[in-house]
Length: 323
Image 1: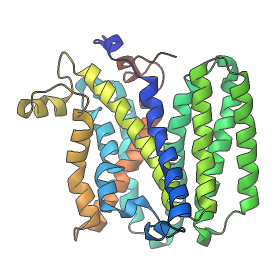
Image 2 (image 1 turned 45 degrees about the vertical axis):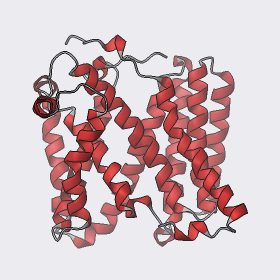
Image 3 (image 1 turned 120 degrees about the vertical axis):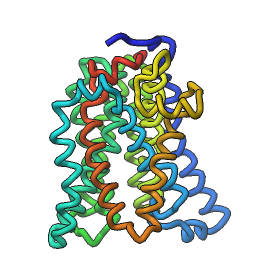
């Protein structure tokens, strides 16, 4: 496949680290609330940002839809057709679980672990691109420790699971930070060092907010970082892929109405297409069906993201990343 103007539209390292600024603003809230409002503001925060309608409109579902839109391309469908049977099975799994109430708990645990893995692993995967090959084996351990710590923090918030103690979480966090600091001290690539430090901060901030009894930020921080980073990759990909010719069917149809070529189109399309599903699973009487559909397309999203951006894939051919 021919790459179209890829080198003119590189992935910007600054744009990749910008979403991590949400960590800084979250700590600003914590400090301001403590010193100026005697910790009264946090009482108004819900347990999760997903309970806020405005958050659901712009995050979670839209980036999943945007990811799916990148696949609606004749050449891409042909390239990934061997993956289609598994994608169909994953989409149907939630419909099967609907009829087995006794499996709800098991399904919820599996869903939570896979979601955390998906959200966090994306950031560690990007960070790996900026490291020397000599660190890749050690980085696998760093990634494992980070993912394990994130999962332990999540389940620690929901005590009803009663699976882990805080001491175990703290032990994994300590090991994670120790390995991360070693990589930073021995890594020659400045971008690699910065990304490792940011991911250390990402996981560590979750533990700090857990101790401050603020589960809202435990969900908010990784979700904003993940979704914004994903939207950025999708926007760059779609802009490069459809710059000289509308290969993508959705873009071909949309640009007949709005004939513009802009990276902004990707999140706009994601939000627009996702809105009916977001509305239905929140307000509609058909919310149960909408939720099942949401779970189905999310499982497919988790699966496809596992191979879409691997080095050498048809998606990656549209991107240029300077390390």
